[in-house]
Image (cartoon, rainbow, N blue to C red):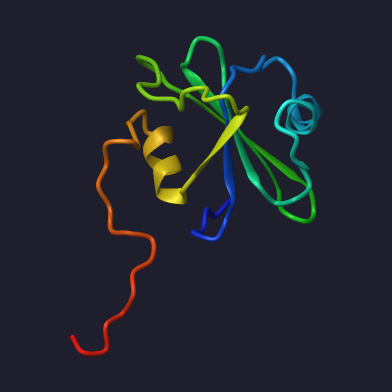
Length: 120
């Protein structure tokens, strides 16, 4: 089972990917389009053209995990916009919202880091 932790680097590919390919095809997309090493332990997130399915590729040190999620109804409401790059980072809780069909850009959470004030 894959456990998403706060320390994991998560990259979301901005362009849709052909889901007919498997692990090797997605690893090639990581190398060629995202300019990232698929063996780095980074969690790579891809979507299909119809915006109703997501695939996640991650290497855990022993082998690759390929996870697929297809929405039974509707489409993904949110996906990062192409801003000149090929991928954008996400936080673990944002990926959870995305996988449930939500919009991580509108959720409000506590800041990732804040200074602890000893006087308080």
